[in-house]
Length: 435
Image (tube, rainbow, N blue to C red; front, side, top):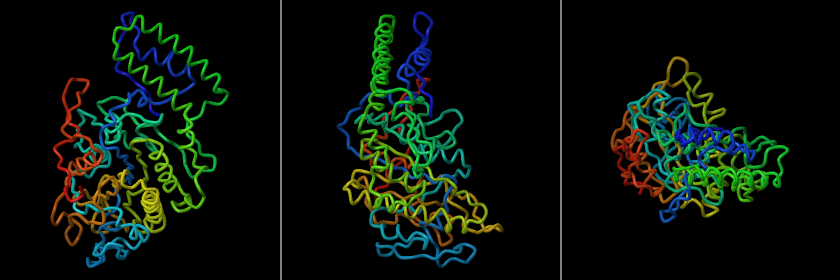
């Protein structure tokens, strides 16, 4: 759970709004919701597209997934073979047979390149579109989209499974108010439940209502001494939306995987990743704007092929393919952008430990849905998958494409707490082949 923090504004009596929140705010409701719920409803006149980001923490091997090199030497191509897909001329790893049959529903960017091969800083780069600098923590795509679109149907605008990666991908300089709602635990666990969607143990709905009345009275008193009207409005929005989530039948239903048909659950895979993808679909269906599903374990310096074929790839194949097929079947794919990526690729040459090391020079990113042109392989890496052979794509371009598909103006500027203007996207160009 992420803490809610406002800027440390001090009232005329020396009491900060942060102090007031911690002493008499959500604790009065018996809740510990994160601060993203303070965001007011944003304008709804933009293109209404949601996003599901499948984040492969550790850096997945591009050669062993979406950019196989069957004609390369054995020490490059590795143990896996290439198989055809349902799109003529595009091959995938033979460990992704289900995704091969969904190739018409997504496109592969095979010439993405980055200068950053360090986990923490590369994670920041890929999740924000901004190169890492210790001076500024830039906001992630989900936080920006949450700020642009706001909440709807009493649902949080930005949800993440498994927390922020290396602390990146959240509100950044915009503040913790734009951090995502965190879902911890395993959705595949029979006893899985989401904190803060139901009242805490021992607190029934009548008690919640009484506490809210007390909170309203406290807030009325606070208004009389509050001179910063904007902060008052932010707090009003926070309390209203926090109460809306805890009392929302839409939220309760969306977070309850037990209401899903068993055959649908099976199609995603009865494991953490598969059921997280399914829950992500349910959340988008209920009104969540942006969902990140974290699936780590891709840092395969040793035993790369065993780790991939025995665990990572079968799980990815079923969950990702199941998500695409389900979105299509429900008529949701055109309004849901699905992005697959990690912080970098892996070395083309297999090391002495049967592993692959960090390799940012070439990597693959996949996108589909949300109006993206699918069934394509954009750009190519060279015959050894070392560098782009043509159409090099920068990380900034990936970010600009995500924002373009979501209807976000990349040229728009936000002000940091130090009153520095920052564009939403850092010098990126949308990938025209996808749009």
